[in-house]
Image (cartoon, rainbow, N blue to C red; front, side, top):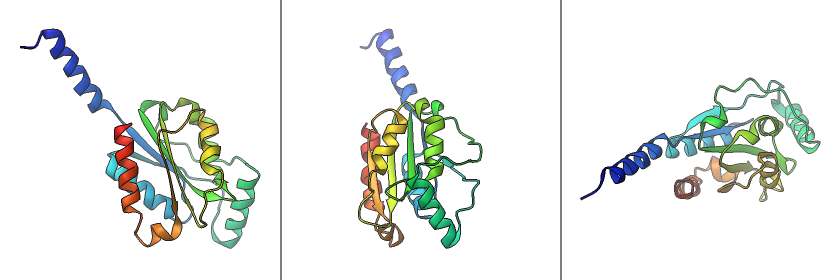
Length: 176
């Protein structure tokens, strides 16, 4: 027979689990990072926030400028975000890898909002075999270590062979 205090504690735990919320915030120039972000958000039951760079990064010239800005660790103007990271228990942040680091839109978002985040998880997509120092740079701007990280190659995402990695990533997030 349980006491009223035990019942109250159990109810609070259930309500706390129900209130546990996650946000997936990402930037994607070509749609690859967006594909992964949507998969993570769907499996996690998370809200989704696309970071929109007001600077055009389309086409070959946009690609070159994007890499140059990332290499120089330049901030950019992003459209105002609709979601407040502090309202979430977990924020998952995704970026393409540009010049071995994060996209300028993600750098701007983390510079503005990283300190508000309670727990973070990080993911990136890259054309090459290595994410460079992207995840470390993101962690530095968040001011806290991520509970999990995921790095995926563009060709893996485009071929559809990324689902198992996302499933494992989300399972680890649910346990953290």
